[in-house]
Every structure is written in structure tokens, then in C-alpha cells.
Length: 617
Image 1 (cartoon, rainbow, N blue to C red):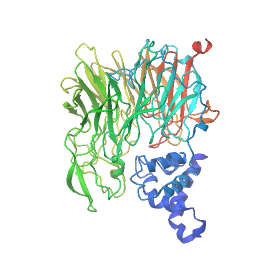
Image 2: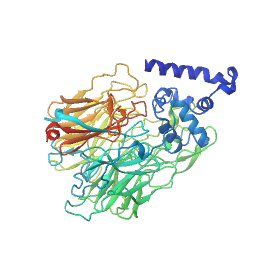
Image 3: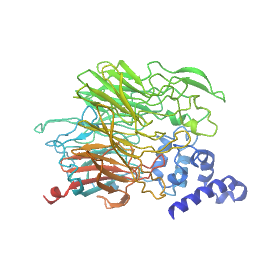
Image 4: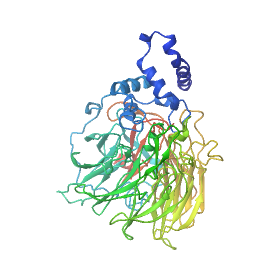
């Protein structure tokens, strides 16, 4: 019934609102109606692929819609509205009031200090500096043989949020995680109560990286590192949540940080991406000038060691669009994934996204090696030449759409490095085309590639592969087909021989959505390997564990349910997507659920599981 109701709302709004001023008493018309018609409906009635339909916006909190207009992806579109108009519009769309994120909504711990006897066991988002995302027996007692014994220990809900994109990390007997509402939390590992809260400028999508220390180091001063949606990089004291340093590494107004940083040998490497791809929808926007890149910091004091751009030269004016607005190039090539750091070769690796304007850059949709000492590009491998695209290509007027018009085949998933192979190491990247590429990390020369999925604007390979031994696991999204991305979709989990790229097995996800809105069987989220298998979340709201030898599902958890949280509220899970994959620590597993954007199911929970035997002890 809810699906029918929201569909009727869309229909009525699209028909009634244009005639409201003529047929209604102006005093009876909600001021949000005119704002919605003038600023939103031309994109949010389903004509723009990445613009969530009005029915989805109605599922979100008013705070999250307001944040998108003030500091998020809709800043450019909402620039003509004052603060009161933005608030009125957010509340009218959602039918809810803008909330106040205060500590009164949280269950605070009696003890705020973290346990310095429990240093972090992993080296960041990718578990190790090669981004393998393999939680082996030294890190967790959870394996494919006992994962079905996991029981929910506690659930934390993110106030005023509709998605949970920040991957948690465990250190100091605490769980560190960011939120859509802009808070970073340190939670007690055992109970989920809140040790401290740090408030940022905007949404925190990145995972949190905590600096290491020794178990007997009572004087340790560990720091937690992360970035926010508006391009700020933070270092805070992991013990107290107090700010140590903050920097915005580039002046571009569309700069954003979505990937967890890499922390190695006292240096912090941060990938730079952008929301300019959305700003380009406006015909008066001068598209486009952003360049992706990586910035290296002294992790202690925040001093920049170097900044390296994926496009070496700044953009220049190359023409004008159909309404006379100047156009710029080359642009784009954002970096969405956490860098691989290769100390043996003295270099790091990233994958890039598409260009935003024409002509496309030679380093878009590419794998790039940069020198660790100064950031100089050593080589690049371009997977899809001539890929220039922005959101304007999905609008009716297409004013700022580049002549190449896509296909928008980013390397959105972080690269990973496979070492110890008989025929040499391989750098591996998964692309939204559905193709996995393996190149020589010394030269960038292609060793193998394999097209596993159909690809599309939100997948093939979307947010994160994982590697255990000689098995590469590739979660496949293949969400959103259509005339531009024809063919059969392959939503599910692949296992590939890492040395050759040959497929070992594929488990296609059964479509259990049964017509539910914003539900899809594709695997978009980052996956994580454990002994004997791999664990990955689907956009249908299920987390599944697959056996390494056969691909058979050994365990499944449906997050589309109500949870009672540690604060005593009722919260709900949703689609699994984004770079937040399951995290394992000793006998526990942590997962975030909810992805209320890009036509996926909203949710706002962090669920902590523990093995039955650990609970009994």
C-alpha cells in the first residue's frame, strides 16, 4: 500500500502543482509546493538516472534532504534558495520536521576513554596496505564454517540519517564510525554506547582509520583520520574526539572526500573526488574544472608533503555550451577509492573515474601509479578512452553533456595488489563496465582482463573487491540497465583465479524484491573475505556469506526489519551499498545497513554480531 500511495503522490504532484496558482487560494498553498515545482520536479520525476524519484525523497529525513542542499550533492541546484526556503522545501518533500542532532538522542557510556591495551588489528579500510580486505585467522575467529552462529549483540542507529556509508573500524575496544548527519562516533565495542562524538562540517562517507600503537604503550596518543563530503580532511585524538588538525587540500568548491585515507609510515594519503558531475546539470554552470588527485600529509601535524593530480594540467576554456556558458577541459578523473600503498616499489596506486567535459582526459577511467616520495605519475593504464559524462547527459536539455556522452565507466572500486604470485605481482581494478583488469605494477602493462558483468551507470564492479590467497572475489552490481547498457545483468558474486582472471564460479542473486521499491539483487557494496569464503551485501537488504570452493551461500541475514537500538529507539536496515563492507574483529562482525540515495532502500543502522560461543562466555 505504501508503494501505491507514494506513486499516487508523485502523480498528483506532477499534475496538480503546475495549476496550483490558478485553481487554489494562494493562502492555502504550502510554500514548499512552488519551490518543489520550480526547482526539483524536472529531475526527480524519474527522467534523470541518478536523481532519486520523489517517492524516495519522501522516505528520507528532512535533515538529510536539507543537508544535500546546503553542503551535499544538491548545492549547485539549491544555490538560488535562501536558508529558510531550503528548510521549507525539505520539510514539504518529506512531510517531516528538520531534526536537531544532539547528544540527548544518544546513549552515552559511563567511561569515555578508549582501552589502550587494544590497538587496531588492521591497517585501514582495506585491512592491509594492499587493500585485500581479507580478515584471516589472526584477525577473527569468524569463518565460513561458523558464521551461521553469529547472533546480534547490539544495534546503533544514526540519528536523522537515511544511509550508512562509513565503514566502521575497531581499536581501543571501541568502534569508530562516521554518519550522514556529520558526526563521527566512538562506540563501546561490547555495548554500543557512545564514548565521544565529533561534529564535522558535513556527511562522513569515508571509513575511519586509526593510527597504530603498542599494547603496552600507556602513553600512546593515537589519532583517527577521515574526510567529509565537502572536502575536509580531519585528524582527531582517538582517545577524546578532540580535533588535532584539519585541512581542505584543494580550493575547488566541488571537492569531496569519499574514500578512507591510507595511513603508512607516518604519511596519510587521501584521495580527492568531486560533486561537480552533479553541478554540471545547470546550463549556466561552467563545466568543468575539477581534477582528481591524491594528497600526502604528515600524519602528525597535517602538513602537506605533496599533491598529485590525475590530470597534470589545469582545465582551460575550450568553447561554450548552447546557451553561451564557457566550457572547460580537461576535467574529472576523480579518485573514489582508497589508495594501495606499495612500499616495496615506492609507489601508490589509484583508479580514476570519467572525464566531466570534452575532450576526455588520457587519465580518466584509468589505473595510475604515483611515486610515494613526490606524487609524480610513473605510469597509467587507461581502460576506456574517450569517456566524458556528467549528469547533464541525463536531463532533457543536455546543455552541458559532452559530445562523448559516457558511458560513465569509473573505477569506483578501490584497486588492490596481489603479491606472491608465481608469475609476478598484479595490480587489479574493477570497473563499472563489469570488466576486471590486472596490470603489471612495475609498468602498467595489461596482463589479463575479463568482462564478468553487463556494466552500467551504477555497476558492474561498484565499491570493492576482495582477495584471499589465489581467489579474487568480485561482487557485481549491474544495477540500472536500459538502452545504453543493453544485455543480460549478472547481479551476484564471482570467484576468479587471480593469476589468470578465469572465472571459477558465479552465484547469481535470486531476485527476492517482488516489485518492492528501490530493491535490487545486485551486489554493490564492498565485500570482505574470511577463512573459507567471502561476505557481501546486496541492494536487496541481505548480507550473504559464500563458500570459497563452491560459491554456495552458507549464511544469510535480512536487514529489512525493525531493530531496537541501544538508545531504545526503533530503526531499520536497508540496501547494502557504498564502500562500507562487513568488518571482523575477533569473534565479532560489524555491518552498516541503509543506502537512501540513487534509488536504493534507506536505512540507518550499525549492527554488531557476536559468535554464540563468545556470547555464552
